[in-house]
Length: 86
Image (cartoon, rainbow, N blue to C red; front, side, top):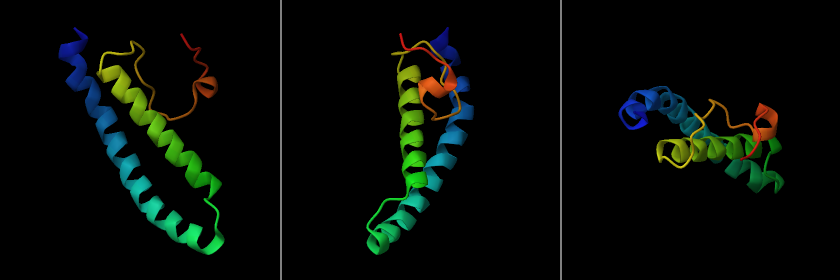
């Protein structure tokens, strides 16, 4: 059943994911120049990049049938979401 509903379940994640990746792309360009000037990667940008990559991984695991927990619309760590690891 999850296989047939998977496409419709992916649609909301697709829109969120596209927006997050576009913002990450532009922020990466901005961070490039920030690193050139200050020699440090901004902490907020690092957190956003890690959260986006974590979100992408959760989506890939769920829709690749490797995890049964529906992914939240957040890239927050499991501890912040109150989820225990299995």
